[in-house]
Image (cartoon, rainbow, N blue to C red):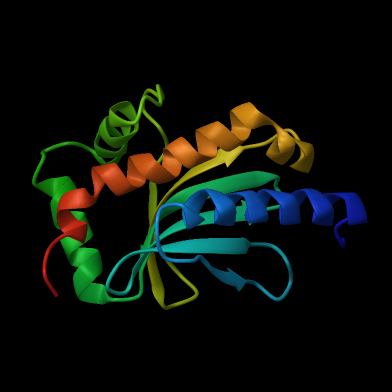
Length: 161
């Protein structure tokens, strides 16, 4: 089912907001959308071959925030960052969220390989509809999730290549 013109406009506005929010922080975003529109990805460089990612999944509806790499060895470094703390993935990400004042006890964290090339750690945020992307509280939460992932994985992101 194709997206309505209204949904397309809301999603576009949200992604433009992400770009503007990030513009003050450094490198421009990259977009990597699936041809069927099922996942609309906005990525921000986080290190060599590593990105912070916001995926709008309009048919669910959901936003998924996480960290992505296309490098198997970097993925292992990210896994080691979690394992070295003795925390579960959820506890590890929760600590990053806590550091940026996002109170989310036991957030779901998925670790998977996407499209056979990207290694991803991600937390989904369910939406009632695409209209939620226009709400300030949702936008603030999504941005805190981005910053929480950056904070949680900071040590692995600063390692020299």
